[in-house]
Length: 217
Ligand SMILES: [Fe+2]
Figure 1: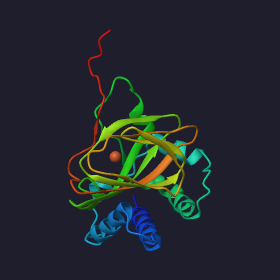
Figure 2: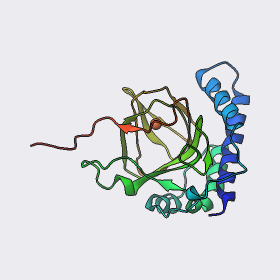
Figure 3: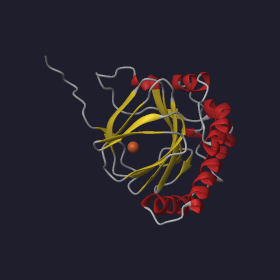
């Protein structure tokens, strides 16, 4: 895979986060976290890539993103989406949760591509940066992780749940998930492409909340 695709994606997201921080007029938890993310991204060595994580992965969810015309009314994220679309095949998509019997095909319908992090082409033990893709009509079930998570909706309006509150978030929305908050997303007719950043404990993986591996009648 040409590393250019990964670097292009990183540059586009950093620029967007910086612009959103500059546009924030009042102190807020999201503005503080954007500042934290940008400071940590400055410490990442983008001159050296781990080739092991630079192999394109022809994940099926990418076809769904490429085949569904984006209905994106937010200019800056529409530009990011258009820039990413031809490059999606070149990103290191994966799905690494343990199988769950109530969603046997979920690993074919959603994936994420980590660009910076402990398991990514560009290494950091302090910050992760990546993209999450979720195919249409899919529930990404309740899950949690100790990292603080910031999402940017790039394309697709999905239902986002954090603790017990559900909201539909259009492209351009920034969403902050504090450490260990239980959250979920559910798509409708259009797929979701969202960028994410993790800070704090980025080594501990996300885990599903409500998995019954031995269902009984
Ligand atoms: Fe999360």
